[in-house]
Amino acid sequence: GAGTFRPDNGWCCAGLASRGAERQCASGIEAVGLHLGQKRYRCPDCAEEDPSQCDWCFVCASGGKSSSVMNLLDTTAVKQLPIWGSLLMKTFKELVIDLDPDLDMAQDAAALAIRIAETIKDPKNEPFAEKIYVGCLVTSAFLCVLQNVLQDNFVPFFAWILTIMAL
Image (cartoon, rainbow, N blue to C red; front, side, top):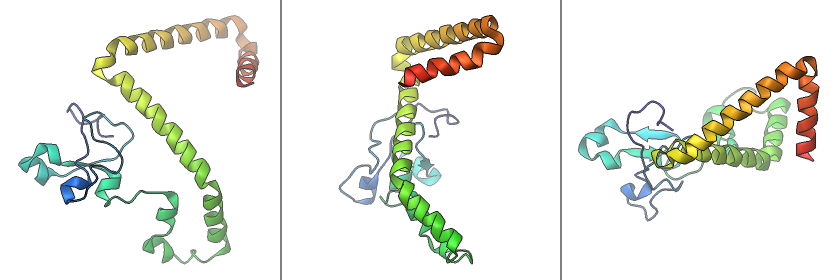
């Protein structure tokens, strides 16, 4: 998202409705917020006319077509590369096809983490954010003290704790 370098209070997608479609936004970005992790496209000409209709998400900016790794591999520019018909590229394409569900799951997990971070950064949730910050500070202090006490045994001990937690 562009909330990290834009001094505004957030944005929402003008969506496909601004282009005459029935759906508002293909990505569901209909409320004003930071929308971290979302690509924000801002039209400076539209901003002069109507500031509320000048921002689009990636999906709406590309006409409502979702992006995936397979869409990137099937572009005309990639097909013109001399390596496109090679065994290496066919193997790579098969690998991407096989891992597409895993990539989607990883992308969903990253999007969830970003939405949680966005919730913490929302000014309305300041008391909740303070609790998170205090928890992180206490955890960091505990790990620092534990590292000083255990010294060379810290890494094996920490790996053992993580293994137990994973079970």
